[in-house]
Length: 326
Image (cartoon, rainbow, N blue to C red; front, side, top):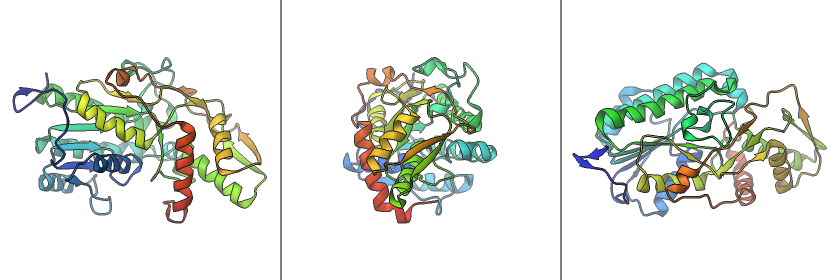
C-alpha cells in the first residue's frame, strides 16, 4: 500500500497551485512536460538549467530541493545520446545518470515529495525480448551492448523508485518512453538519436542539393516513435490516474523500419536524392516495440501521428537551426 500522511493514496487531479519541480526542464521531454503543465493551469513550476544547477552535485541538489519544497517532481533530466555516443562514452552515461538520479530521488525523499515520476527509456529491456515488449520483460535477458551502461543506470532508477514505495510507502511511479522526438531535441551529428540525426542529415542534403545521403546500418531494424508532446500528456495522465510499483510503457503501439522513417523524413524535407546504407556500421536492437496495454488500461493513447509529428519537428528544426546545440 502507498500512502500520503498515513492515508491510503488514490490517484487524483494534482493541485495546480502546488510547487512542481521538473528536473531537466529544458530538454526534449522536460520542456514538453513544462509546456503541458503550463497549459493545464499549473502556477508554481520550478526548474533550473544545468549551468545553474548541476544535478550531479549532491549538496547543490539537496539545497535546491529544500528551497523549493516541491509537492510533485518529474525526473526528466539525463545524459542521453545515440549509438555512437553511448558506445564511445559508456562510463559517462553510467556515472552521470546514476548520480543525477540518486541525488534527485534522495533529495525528494528527504523533502517528503508526495508524487515523483521517474522517466527511463525502453533500452532497459533485453535486446531480444519478445515483441511487443511487456513491462515484466525487465531483467529477463541480456541488454543491447551499444547502450548497456545507460540502460543499467535507468534500471537502477526504476528500482530506487520501487524501493521507496516498499520502504516508505510513497506513491512514486516510473514510466518508460519509447523513442521520442520533437522540439528541443538534440540534433547534433555525433550525439543525437536516430530520428533527429536523420532530420538534420536529410535537411542539410536537401539545402545543399546533394545527390545522396548515407545512413548507418541496413535500415531494417524496426523502431517506435512518440512525439514529446504526446509523452508529456501521458506523464500528466499517469500522475493523475495511475499508482503502482511497475514501470509503465509509453508509446504508440506501432513501429516502422529505419528505412521507412528515413524515406518519410526525406519526403518531408524535400530531399529527392538517393539513400545509401553503410552496412559496416551497427544496427542496434533488431526491433523495439513496446506493449502499451497497461497505459491503455489507465485510459491513455497517443494522438499525434508520425507524419504530423515529423512535419512539426522539421518546421521547429528549421526555425531554430542556427541556435541548436552541437
